[in-house]
Image (cartoon, rainbow, N blue to C red; front, side, top):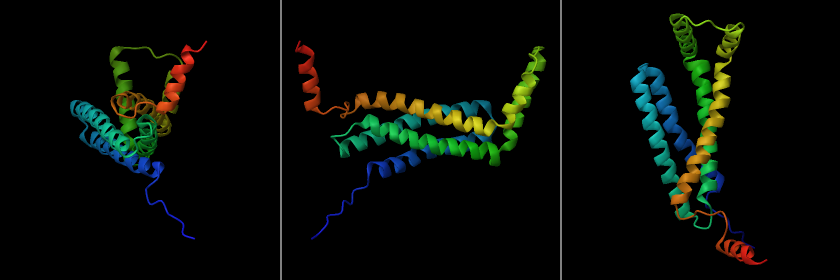
Length: 185
């Protein structure tokens, strides 16, 4: 008795590879942003990263749609973006906690200086909250960054899946059944 082995990679292994490729864009640009310390250049890099990430997600989803015409590209895009968000969140934690720990202190010091220059009166207890936030910034940024990237991934996957061939999560038969049910009273 011979067992046939499916040599095609699973959806999850493909998504993991594509998620790593998508995350690499953010990891590289994020690290360059820390190294440049130029506000304009950092903003420009962020815009290029956003556009490049959207374009790359589009390419990934179209490629998957061509290889798997019976599956939804939206679902695949969400999986890729979620795995990419996980890598990006962990990388941001590593950056703030280990690679560039002074960046948080510098940013908070700059904020306090701006408050002083404006003559702003800080509410009572605000300094304590800000100090706790500064101490836990790597964790806060990791968690909030993960959710933000997943949310953007869902939005862009939905938008990009509308332009692809595999738009619906329903098979044509299910769509016909749904349309027929609408008119049966």
